[in-house]
View (cartoon, rainbow, N blue to C red):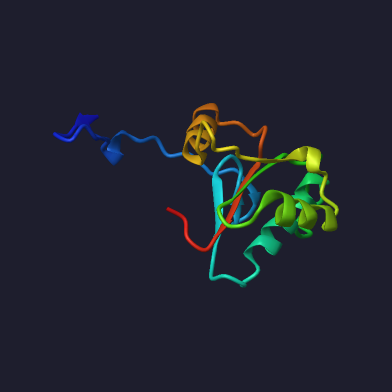
Length: 137
């Protein structure tokens, strides 16, 4: 590993050991990684993501090949929609188990902090990290 003049640490790809990706829903949603659904306003991003979250929270697969043995915990993040007036009512309409769906309170920690935490733990406790956005920084 090398450190540059601006403090960035650079890693040669020859130093990286390859690993296989573990998939919740191949090839769309990997376990323990952030999945971002991006598109223009009105494309249905929130509807799609909240329905996926609802199915997973109830232990229902997204297609005939996805075999879930139990309900899945989902962390959902949206930069656009209100939790009380948009997200929660849509989850309830989709029949979600809201005990299994968490949202990130970014008052003290950000989404990037959470991604770093799960990357270090390699955790499958929360199988899906879903975000719908027209723009993601």
